[in-house]
Length: 260
Length: 349
Image (cartoon, rainbow over the protein chains, first blue to last red):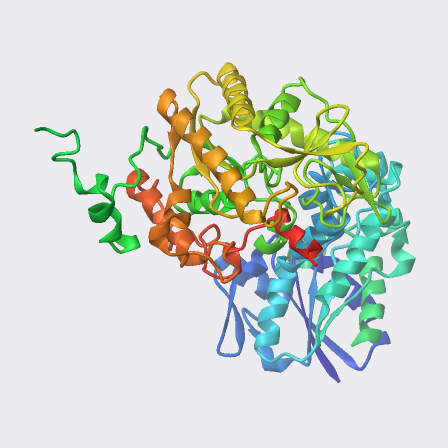
C-alpha cells in the first residue's frame, strides 16, 4: 500500500472527488487530502515532523478536508502531491505574459514590453519556482520526503474563449490563442518543468484527454465543479472557468497512480 | 611681501594636501554644489563606471529612476547581462556625449538613427545598445519595436528626473558616414560588420563634447527647468584605441578632454556639479592600487573609496548599504559591471 498525502488549494476539490470515484480502481493507494482555500498552504510551518497550520482558518480547512486531522504527519506518507497552489499556466499568463512578450510571440500589440525569448522563459520559470507548490516541495524535500509530485492547476475551460473581459484574464487568453502564441506558451511551461525537475520531484502534465488544444481544458470537465468546502457539494458560479469537476479529478488520479 | 598663497588651507598645497597623506586620508577633494535628497528623482547614465554610482545610490536609499525594470524572476546577474537595473533606462553604456545628445533627441522625436539594426548569425541587435540582448532578437522588426518601447521610457526618464548624473567615458566613437548616427561600439565588435565605406571613426574634440553636453542640458532644461547635473569622468582607461596613437596617449587625450569639459561646465553653470572620481582613482597619490592588475578595471576597494567620498558629502537617503539586501553591493559578483568596450581586448594580437 502506497500512502499518499495530497495537499492543495481550491483545485484540490476536483482531485478529492476524483479519488472518491476512482479509489476502487487503485487498491494499492491510500490517499489523504489536506487543503486550504487560496494561498492558505503558505500559512504553515514544518516542525517536528509535522506540517502545522498557523491560522485557525487553515487548521479548520485541514480538518474539513482530511476528516478531522489538523496537521500533517510527514512520516505517515510515502509520497506527497501538491495540487494547484500557483503552479499553473495562469500564473505565467497573469504574472509575465500580461506585461512582457518575447520575440517568440506573435501577439506584440498593446502596452507590453518586448524581451528576448530566454528572458521571458527565465522569468516564467522563476515565477513557477516561487509558487507555493514549489515552496512546499522544497520544505518536504528538506524534511526527507523522497517522492513529491506537482499537479498543476488545470488549464481554464475552453469556455474562456467566449467569456467577457471580467472573467479570469479572458482577453489575454483569447488573444494568446487568436494570435498563435499558444504553442510558445506551452513550450515555455514544458521548459520550466524541465528546469525545475529534481531528484524525487516530479511534475504531472495535465491528462491529455482533458485538454482542448494547448491552453485549455475541455468544457465538459468544468461543468459542476465544486468548492473546497464542507461536503464538497457547493458548486462554483456558472461563469467559473478555472475549476474542474470530479471527472477531471478522476483523470488526474489515474495519471498520478501511474506515476507514484 | 604678501603672497596670495600665504595662509591657504593645507589642502591647497601638494605636499600637505597630497604627498604627506595616505590616499584614504586626503580631505576635501569634493564639495557638493547642491543637495541631493531622498525625494530627488535621479537619472543615471554614462560609461561602465557609472554603474557603480547607480548601484551605490540605490543601496543608500536614493531614488534612482528605473523606467525599464527587469521582468520579475530574473536574478541580478541575468538582469544586468540584459541591461536591466544598470541605469535609469535600458540604454546600456553611454560612453560619449554624442550618444547622450543623440538619445535625448531621439526620445524627443528630433532624431532617427540610421542603420540602427545589426545582424550576426541570423540574430538581430540594436546597434545603439548592442549588449542589452546578448543573443539578439529574431528579426529587425523586433529590434525596432523594442527600441520604440525603450525610447518612450527614455523620454519618461527625461521628463521626471530632477537630478541627472552622467559619467563621461570616452571621446572615441564610431559614426555612420551619411547620417552621423553615433554607435557605442564599432560594428563588428558585438554584431554587424565593419565597412569603412559606411562607418567612420571619430575622436570627439573638446568643442564637440562641450557642444553636445550643452545641447543635452538645453533639452533637459526645456523639459525640466529645475533639473541639475552631476558629472563624473570615468577613471577607466581605454581598452583599445582606433586613433593613430599609443593607447596610453589616446587615453590621456580622451580623459583630458572629458575632464576639461567637466571642469569648464562646473565653473560656469550653477546647475552642474563635478564629482572627482577620476582624480580619486587615477591620480598619482593612489599609486594605481585602486586598479586591478590589468591597470584598467577599478577594484572594489577603489569603488568603495570613491563612493565613500561621494556619500561623505551627500549622506544617505535613509538606507544603509548593509540593510538594502537586494540593491546593496555584496562585494562579489554584484559589483561586476557590464562593459562592452572591454570586448575590444579580444581583438588584441
